[in-house]
Every structure is written in C-alpha cells, then in structure tokens.
Length: 169
Image (cartoon, rainbow, N blue to C red; front, side):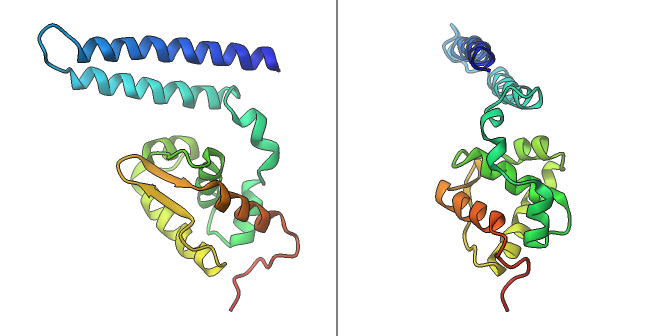
C-alpha cells in the first residue's frame, strides 16, 4: 500500500508541476497579457487529477474511509430525504476544512452543480433540528467546508447508537 501511495503522490506531484509550469508560462508571456482561458483550463486539469485519483481509489480516502459511516446510516440518523444529502455531507466531512466548490461536490456526489446550494441549505436546516448550527461554512468564491471539530461532533452523533434518530422536540 505504501508503494501505491508513493507512486500516487509522485504522479500527482509531477502532473501538478507540469500544469503549474504552463500557468507560469501564461502569466509571464512576452506580450504581458495573461491568457485567462489557458489558466482556467489548467485549474480544471488540477481539479480533474484529484477527482480521477479518488475515482480510481488512489486518493486520500483509502486511508480514511474506514472511519466514516455509510451514507445510508447518515440518511437514517438525520432523516434526509435521499442519499444525495448524505453524499454531500460525507464529502465535506472527508475534506475536513478544505473547501469544495459546487462543481467538485457535484462531481463527487453525482448531483447537479446548480442544486448543490439548495442541498446545502436543506442540510443546514435539518441538522439545526439536531443541534448542529453553523456546521457548513462557506469560503466565498472557494466553496463549502466543515471544520474538523464539527466533523468530529457529527461522527460522534452518527456513530452513537443511543443518539436519537429523530430531532428533539
């Protein structure tokens, strides 16, 4: 497993280095004009690298998945309407303080990017009923995130067999 991790990190590092050189080239070109289209494409490639690593089981989730509950358990505990709510919450918990954009959340959870903000709003409302206020934070222009402390609280609640599956009255 450590060889796979080292290979993964090396491939990831090499790919990021190549993309960063392209961005630097676009910013420091001879004409003094920044090619924003090329920079945006490079940023998209960086995001795609991380997504592809996760889809192929080579991301950090290999080392953390065992600590996170099944989405069905989260759906049951909070009474979510469907597993999309749980998938979004779980993705935010796994990223721990690293903001995830709507596009990234949509890709990870197979939801529409336009509907992510609605899901986030509904998750906040539902979790507030269970005493979890201000759990999901917004990094404006960056994305949504959950702090490590809040993540631990959610995990403790979900994994506690004695915690009520319905909100307190």
